[in-house]
Every structure is written in structure tokens, then in C-alpha cells.
Length: 338
View 1 (tube, rainbow, N blue to C red):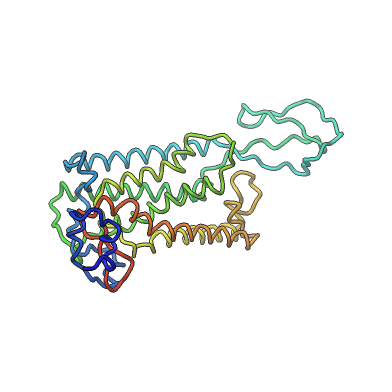
View 2 (view 1 turned 120 degrees about the vertical axis):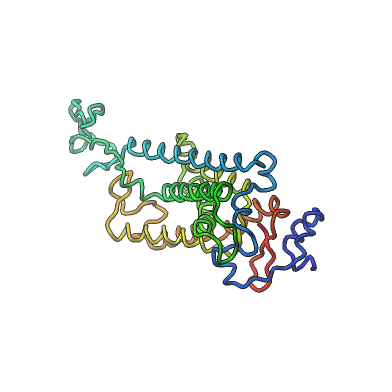
């Protein structure tokens, strides 16, 4: 096969020894590429054994399974931490008739003790009414954030990945490929690209659009807007699960699902968790300003569309080129790259 047709050979030509096995073309149909059934690879090998890199320290099936279980437990702890931190955070509702301009009105210096028993608020001009007491975010708002959607998605994926690896290594279930691929393997395989690209999407969008340079950094923010992608990257680097470019539709569907949720939230009168007034989840998805919302929507979809193809190229192919064949985006004649 010529280097022109073989994407793996073209990308990794310096490694002739590893690229030699890629000279055989697989030629699968689009239906075979888009379904979540393995093509020519046994599921116990693909999901139960570590990658070429992972074998350096995780060659033992017990060690590999334990590491995947460790990633699951670690991420469960991060999600619980995020929830606890959220319910202990407070919104800052706007005061009616408040003004930012200087006022000559002098208010009495008394203070009001809020219902939490710890916070005091003073009177504010020009009305000299007591400022609103801080209001806890409320656990319900936790589920409106894209960050937290992705935390849950990543937790579910890591749970299925651990269970699939454990079953591959220690169960008596029959091995197989194609139509014999077990349902839980298909679920794990489908969740991986969505969680991988979703975690990177949250990481990029938070630091590029939401974070204000110079503002205070919190450990939980770093873990949920950076640590999330690190965990997924570790998982991708140590496993042998194939990752097809054709599966780009999974992260795209995830991004579109959240955008649909944000529209429904806006139409239902939902408010921002911080000021309890603004009719949006994020200012970049303010549907009362369709132009800005569409711009934010396009940015999210473009990011997920661009990141999905590059993730396999940057993280998987260099490590798994010797383990299994790899794929290019073409449907008619594809080479594998997982």
C-alpha cells in the first residue's frame, strides 16, 4: 500500500517497524464504522489489556483493572467535592432600586442578621433598605452547568470502563467481535469519545470564556476545569480501546444536547445561579440575545467538531499503532488507527 493511502504510515513513517503491520487494508463500510460493535478485534483484548504505554507498568491484568478502578474512585470523590462546595456557595442577588452612582443619602448604621446566623447585611442608599441576604446556590442549579454534566458523563464512562475491564479479565463471559460484542462494551465505547472531547471542551471554554484573569482560583475549579481532562487523558493513554474518527458524532450529539437544554431552560424562565435574575445559564448562551447565543453555540459546536478528530491523532495513534490497526475518516477504504 502506498503512503498516500495509509494515513498511519504517512504520520508515523519514521517508525517503519511499527508501521509494517498497517499495510493491510480493512475496507469496512460506513455502517460498520458507525455502529458500536468491534470489527475484527476481540473485546476482551481491546478492553481488558493495557496499551503499549500502559504495559510498561500495567502489564498485569490486576494492576490495569485496579488503576481503572482507582480513576473511578478518584473522580467520584471529585464529584462529591464539587456538590458539597456548590451547596456551600452563595448567590449575590441584586438589590431593588440599587444604583452604582454615588449617593448623598446617609443611612443608619444598624445591621440585619441573616437566617444563616452568621451573615450581617447593612442598609444601602438610596432607599436605605437592607441589602438582600446571600442565598445558597441550591442543589438544583448544580445540574444546569455544562461542567457538572461533563463530571457525570465522565463518572459514568469511568464506571463502565472499570466494569468492562474487570469482566474482560476475570469473568467467564465468551469473547467475541462484531455481533458478539456485549452491550456494556458498546456503551463503554460510545461514552469514551463524548467524555474525552467533552472534558477538553469544558477545560478550554472555562479558561477562554468564563475565567476572569486575576480573580481568585479555587482548587475545585482547577480540578473540574482541567483535572477532568487529565483523568480522561490518562485513561486514553493506558487503554487499548479503539477510537474511530467516525465516532465524532458522539461528542457532537453531547454538545447539541446541552445546547438544547439551555434553550429549554431559557424558555421555561430559568435564571442564573449567581444573580438569580438573568435569564440564562451562561452569559455566552443568553438566548434573549440571539446573536450572542448563536455565536456561543457555534463556538461550542466548532470546538467539539475540531477536537474530536485531533484527540485520536495526538493521544492514541502514537501509542497504539503497534497494538491494533487504525482508521482514517474515509468510509470506503479506511485504515485503522487505535
